[in-house]
Figure 1 (cartoon, helix red, strand yellow):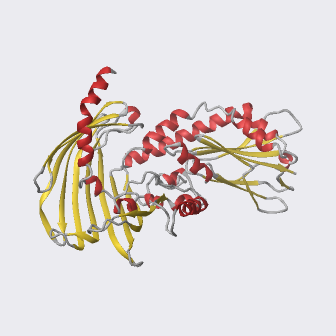
Figure 2: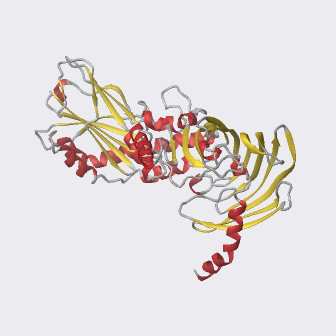
Figure 3: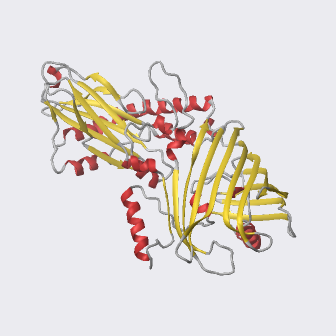
Length: 384
Length: 128
């Protein structure tokens, strides 16, 4: 514990450096985001509402309006997945996992477009100075975006494991329900269907004993977390600015697309892989109608950034290299950013990250960053 | 609140459609409320959809005056309790009985209980 405290103390200046540098263009900015509306206007909202129903969405907007001095919501941001609102009938775990439901005569197979149904919409109402002119006035800006996975492909071996895990869970659940019939279910079946039914049923349900399913359920959850061998993610967003003269104009437009491949490197605990060789290729198109050029004048900027990264991701260690190339208004930037990265999980929820390499052309083109972060969660080390 | 379904000399057909984002398993059973005998299982789901395909439950002699229950356990697979709670809201059961003089009738679940990470659906109906 003492050593850990000393380590944290020594690394505080480095952490500050790491956070400052993180504001510059990095590959993570090019990866297709789920909440594109926030990425487009450079905000990291501290409070994002994720309404589960249309009613809670309307309530959130109304609450934000009541806090505002105008008819414009006061720094309100929302991210939602319409699929959860629709609550479509006929859903099953097979459809959720992108598997074809098992029927006699059907082969085990996946639906590679199953990720589309979880497409996310995001919107942000912000007051921020987004036009880099001399006036330091905030604009009322509305940004809306969409992001989702177009294609997701798992290996045939993984698909078979998922089917097998579901079959095992179902068999265990049947035995478990039979065991609970004598304990609680028969009592539920005998209850009077009157006004006391719900309370009595609830009390009996809480006595239900999960004796058989936890191991199969745990294995299933581990399999669900296995990364696909191929994924294609896309996002797009547009931001509308409210100008001083009361008119509105399109401020920024962005499109992101990312191709990812996760090559498994052997099996981990319980046959579930946690080690990968990752490859990502990504592109971002950003049109900014209020971009400052080298002469300090506002102009329309068309920016296309290409990036890629590759590396090994193990349970406690990641090693990789990433590169970014830029094109601005059709002109290719002769510089590029090429960085080697390392991430180490030194203890539960404590990570050390490092980046070493060269940035785009400029007086400080060398990058040498070393940082530490900690938090709560059970994530494996990802490529920084 | 009470569900009833009338039968005659024809066979009773049961179908259960479970809609859920998690593996599900269902068991249909009959119970004689006038006796202390345990329930008798008459049907099970065939895979992790939890659905029971249309099948003959039993004959008139065995069913008349008894109570049919379809009990379903669904394990929610959301990464956290908030997500699982949202998934739980979307869980539904729809049950169809056919073969009686009133023909095909559809019923919703009688009760739904979310006990993280599971949802339990109960459908009860008296066969007369």
